Each structure stands twice: as C-alpha cells, then as structure tokens.
Image (cartoon, rainbow, N blue to C red):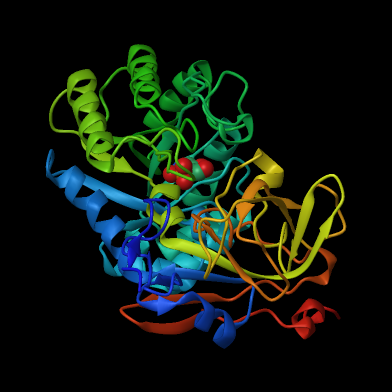
Length: 422
Ligand SMILES: Cc1ncc(COP(=O)(O)O)c(C=O)c1O
C-alpha cells in the first residue's frame, strides 16, 4: 500500500492523500465530506486559518510592538471565519454596512473595526457611528463633508484616516489594481492636501493617519515601497498611524511563489521606519493571504462529453467561483480520490454561459460522472462573490479540524430564492 502523500502549498496545511490516494483535509476524508454535506461545498481548514492569522501577527511582532492586523473581511465575508479571526486577536476591515453588521456579529470589538468604501451612504456612516467603529477611512472630499456634518449633529468626534491614491499600479489584474492614477478609490494627492486642511480645521474628526491599498494578489514587495515613497514625498510623515492596506498575493498553482508573510511584514515595517520615522503605528489589512489557501471546493461531476475538448460538467461554477470569469484566474483541479491524472479536460460549470469554465487546462484521471473534484485555494473572493445565477442555491461552508467536520453556513435552499418576495 502506498504511503500518505503531502500536497503542495496550494492546499491547506496538512492536507494530504491517504494510503488509498484519497484527499484528506483537516483530518477529514473529502469523499465523506461530499457525501455528508453535498456538493458543491466550501471546506475550510480551521487550524490552517488560525495558523495564518498567527503567522501575520508574529511576523509583525518580530519587528514592532505597535501594529494591528485587520482582516479584510471582503475576502471571506462569513461570520464563522470572522469569529475565528476575532478570537485570534485581529481587527476587521469592512467595506460597507453589510460587512460591518457581519463583523459585529462575528465578535470583533467595534473599536477594532475600520469602515472603508468609495461611496459610503449616509446610512452606512450612521451605522458605523452608532456602532462606535474605531476608524472611518475617508475616501473622498464629499464623504469628509458629510461625515463632519453627521458628527456635528451628534456632537461626537470620530477617528479617521484618509485613503490616498498614490498613483502606483502593481503588476496584477486591472480589476484588482486600486492605487493607480485613474482609480475610483481614494483621494488624489491634490485632493488629499485639501482633505488634510479640512480635517485639521474640524473639531469633529481626529485624523490619526493615512491609508493606501494599491491592489490585490501582489507578488512583489517593491510597489508597496513605491507607494509609500510617493505618499510621504507629497504629504509628509507627520501622522501617527500608517495603514498600508493588504494585497499580499498567494499561490494558486506551481509558478512563482508569493513573498513570505515574514518578508512582507519585515519590508512594511522597515519602509515605514525608514520613510516615516520611528514611533509610528502600522496597520495591515490582509484578506486573500489569510483565507485563500485555507479552503478547497468540492464538486461532483455530472457529465463528461467530447468535441474539440473533453468537457467535464460539475454541479457548481460561476455561482460559487467567479474569479476565473472575472480575472482569468487559474485553479488546480483533481479527482479527489485519483490525483495526478493525464486526461486533458475543460472543467465547466452548470450555468447558461459558455464562459462558465472553472479550469481550462485540467489534467484529470479519467473523470466520470459521480467523481468528486476538488479545486484548492478557493478561500478568498469565492464565498464572498457567490451568487444565485440560474437560481443556483449557494454552497455551504464546512469547517474541518482534526478529523471533525461542522457546518457553519448551511446550503442555500430553493425557498431562500424567494424569501425576500413581498
Ligand atoms: C481597502 C482594502 N484593504 C484590504 C484589502 C485586501 O486585499 P487582499 O485580499 O489582497 O489582501 C482590500 C481588497 O480589495 C481592500 O480594498
């Protein structure tokens, strides 16, 4: 009998093939998970999630005492995921009223929450003020005026940061590049000067620092420094808090590995010390790097057919993983109990679009209807971007840990599709 086989770093830590060649995640057998919870299903290794949170905290703690790590909750906007990360001592970045409500439910202290958004509504600002969020990251001059008015009406003050668009475009997909010269996010450097003056003259806002987030899935550390150089050159260094956003890339396949969390944290702390001086607080907002590789999605093959290619049709698709369609993102895929196949296949979803293809260049072991397929690294921007196209109920989230599996989000039901009808 073959020995157990560890899997690549694309999979959750500790995931392996047992002696029968069957995928084990968090000590649970993938085929049994598929049987118990159905497919498609997101399977999250809870210990891996905790380990990644701890890795971020200890990577920053190795270089500074004055830092905070905030989970960018958009990456996996799920109460149970937030709860784990709150327990691990992280703060939370929310991008609107919905994520704010989830973060509070997950147990983040209001003071550890920061509200983002390029088009925050007055209702969202009120919700944040009512909740007592720690920081509002002001995106634009209109918002600053609106927020100041709301604060004046209440007679309360609020800590804020200003979101700056540094004019730096890292090497990533244009849809997730957020700090370039033509971005919808943040204040350009000229507007930022005006916002600084406006904030300095208002008794209602307490400007603690500057924020920039240049994009996501960034595989090199250089653009973070370039952004900080530009911001400090234009706006100075006289701010106690420097929030450098998130953006650290992850591995989706073999190819180029991302920088390690340790190198990323060391570089960010060093650049703030060098360019902004000592005694600054650093805030970091990882999303993808905390959650992507903690999770695999399980599907069941429904059909296999051949024309120019071999088409493998599964029971999910663009409703549970939109990233291949939005960004041309590549995923690995395997038959969960027959890894390492050689049949070239196109793994397609079940939706009424020809572009509903999960993996174009798959090599699978003679896939057949009923086989369980696994795509790793689906823990970031999968569940959060899920939708009900074609009336497809969204998949459940299953936490696995040391051989135990528990359902933390149930599968959506067809009745949920009309639960908002009036
Ligand atoms: C303001 C902000 N911070 C943090 C993040 C997290 O980015 P990532 O998931 O790449 O770490 C995002 C994602 O878009 C963001 O908009």
